[in-house]
Image (cartoon, rainbow, N blue to C red; front, top):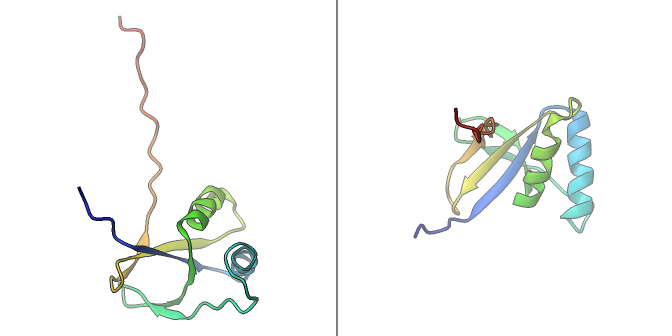
Length: 103
């Protein structure tokens, strides 16, 4: 059985509107204080980005909202306590067609 590693999720916003939406959602859902911050964080590709730390449930919610043309963001994760922060690419796979009626 595999050991489950601790995963820390992050969201990087690409514009001001998305940043405001995510800040409002995070403060309302996960943060107790209005002073939610997103410090510059070094990623595995060598670029410093301002990342919002969030829960896996919030990442799932944002993935569902990913079709909204007004929201521009990228999702990152860190595995373990000292792992590198890497971008996560979610691949939408087509549903497998089943042939119920064989000829």
